[in-house]
Length: 548
Ligand SMILES: [Zn+2]
Image 1 (cartoon, rainbow, N blue to C red):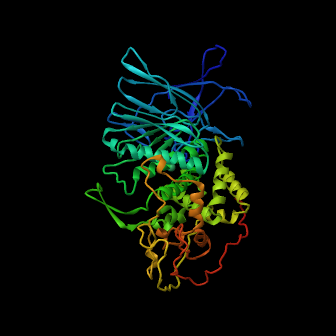
Image 2 (tube, protein in one colour):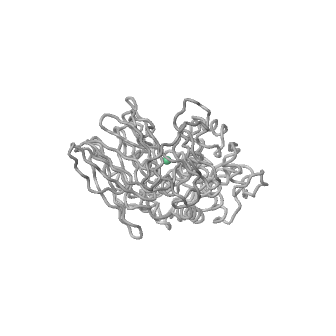
Image 3 (cartoon, rainbow, N blue to C red):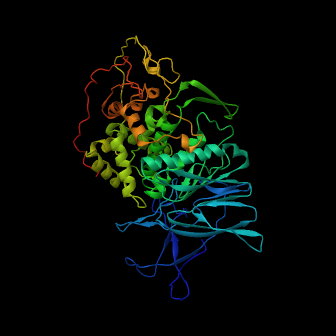
């Protein structure tokens, strides 16, 4: 930081301001990531302060989405940000420890000068580049209603443009910046970007802006998988398989952040789960809707050569805590309520991302998709271009669902208890008949016989996203999916099943019915557990705190 000065605005010279580094989070005197700037006088409501800040960034090797690798630059978190002054009179500003940032919405007008021939992508809408006498080219980007600005540059980028269009949704220009060794991923990046714009737009609310830039970073560059307003970084690796869709899933996640992070701008530093769990829940719902099930993947030769086992479907992670090695232990260390910057290194991802997503998918299955869709849409609408808190989220859930779910959030959000479920007894009977409507078809479900726990089926309604037109994500389709309860490929874990089993997570074990979409014949082979029948949740006495 070179200087911070107050610019009076009346032609008077700038007035340098006193600054000091502060460490409110851990008292580490060597931490120089948060600065206090003393103003000469108080600023009243509605008054304007103009500051001039001069700084130089020494671009590091890639670290936390800022850095240079060869001739590839990714510049996120590259300029001093102003903290958020809360309505309660307190600053929301922290040292940079291990998470992201929180800033107010604003308007950005940024000029970036790079050598001739270097491609530039950034937050915002670009003007025509201007060639300079010194051999550089200045690229100008402008954006409003954004709380951050990121950019990238490299002479090796290959830039592709496309346009998302769908009835009822505003068009969005897509700019895809691919490195030469990943050009074969072009259609996969574009189709997943369009799928996200379409399905999140139809399910919840249209995309906020008219443009998005998708950047393909070098593998292992520490710059992939990140979101900034109107700007996301992807994820790819050598032999990025189309079977388990690393690139597609990452793109769906990061583009999802355009809704919950860029537009619904909760405090990422303190309440990381509010945007990460919502995005994780939404993108996995979308993956479930448009792609075939995941299958077992093993990688050989130093993790480079993928080998797939199509007959071994995987239980997916957002649905079951037990699908994480060692998850049980981190779950007991901290609750979801713990501010993310205080998370243990093991719990940072497990809590805000996966336990949060597990909490939301449980609510979806407890309330039903129709109600849950209204909840998320109301939350998204109400806090569009605003900064909600967890209390705001809980309030919307209770209001729209018409229920006081404080008992649920006491357990799932504030608690550290584990679900301790067990199978007490299992019985089975053979199934003598096949579902007539599906017999002999390659997409029909197969009666499970006595080995019900390995039941597996491919959904006929799923399709690959070879283009946006192939994506089906209409609310009616989704409602059908929810109404039919469990996904058979998730059978075998109580957490993974449908609405009834979502109850089982919180209250005990109860197996789900396996009723395939669109097929009226259900399996008659069901494991049974003692005392589970008729178990319904009851609101618990409050434990002191309310979820709002
Ligand atoms: Zn995320």
